[in-house]
Length: 404
Image (cartoon, rainbow, N blue to C red; front, side):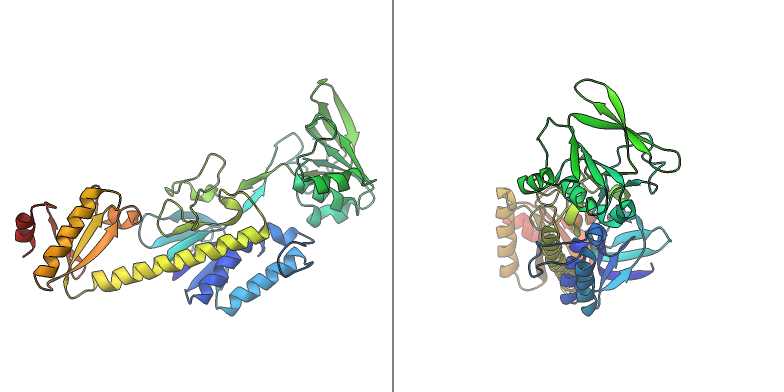
């Protein structure tokens, strides 16, 4: 094992950095692993005007402030790509492309998403030679030229308007009938009033044309079925995002059919100690401010989880007394009745045992560690080692005879 941490955060965008700030502030030994530029997609955003406290700020500048804040709390950073994980044990394992194996008590997945690829002819071969996915990164290279934008959502229209600051003309290819865009009304109105923007309706892109550089596109009209070529020097694709979660394959983490991770209000996944935040989780709003909120929530939840884990290790596994590890379910009456009976027997028969309750609904990893499938169940520990299991009889006499 290269290094052991309290908290590892996979991803250095606004969600991951926000989590890092909260983790560091809580004095957790925290590591952020990021394969690219700190800030993720936000680092490619030229202008942000809706992040609280910043009337206007560039994405890179805002992310620099986030990182500086995290570093103030002694957060560590590692520029590497995570290729696999092992969440099957209490200590979570994270492996990188360069061969590092890192361990943590809790992991926050904040790896974000990437632009969706349509895989039409010419798209991959001409990527970087006229085909682009980030206006703020590449628009300036098309000064005075003709550019095609594919997509009609917020990102496509807003990025398209940004491109008009450089390009001679921006033509937007839209699937829908004339006048219908998928973006917000304000952006649509601004785009329609932009003299440099034109729209081709009821159409889709069939091919990107060109040998070494983009020379044009082939456009198909969805109503007539006819195709036509349009000369241009650049094509920007804005047709959605794909979560960067492929490295989680085989991890037992629940992931939906689109690749997003479902979580609860505490950002908890189906595996204890694993949290998902930002653009790689199932959520309604994908903005810097909501990503930052996700990160804060997950880090606080992780801190409390780690505290419980440390308490268990110190108070249960290292206790001088014998420990009765009671697994129960608050929704099962039999569990609650047995818990009451067991507590009564312990209080009436000295202080030989310490009782530690484990709710199966929230402590699945611990239940798995002791192979508990049904409740109630009692495991007797002596200095952390299992010495026997108790028949959870509701007969007080039989139960007492097993313990005293």
